[in-house]
Length: 120
Ligand SMILES: [Zn+2]
Image 1 (tube, rainbow, N blue to C red):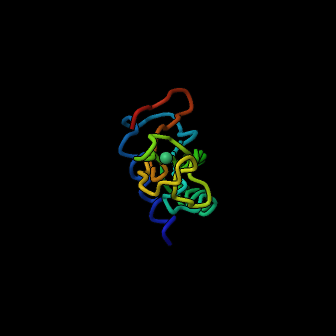
Image 2: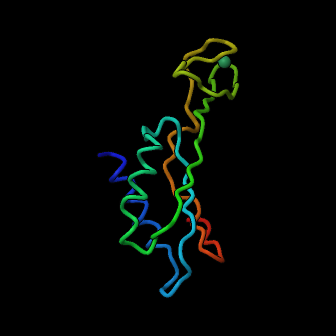
């Protein structure tokens, strides 16, 4: 399953960024996931909680921030949110647009019980 390998990846990344043991328990892992990243959030959360029990992340919560798809129109320079995969400019109907966000799939922050490990 796609989400399972992503969850495993996230756990590896977090473990690589944890301070040396003993460290406080991990309270939360914050992620940014773009609407176009092709990830089913419910499934990712399920996989994450299913596989953390044997890791130092035991008990941690996965907090996912959805990143909308934003595009830039090469015709009129408009920045707009792409809805329903309608990839044309809402203002000038140009189809020469560039997607500038919405493909994110990254861990942005790990929250330990009493401190934060930022900027991963
Ligand atoms: Zn335009």
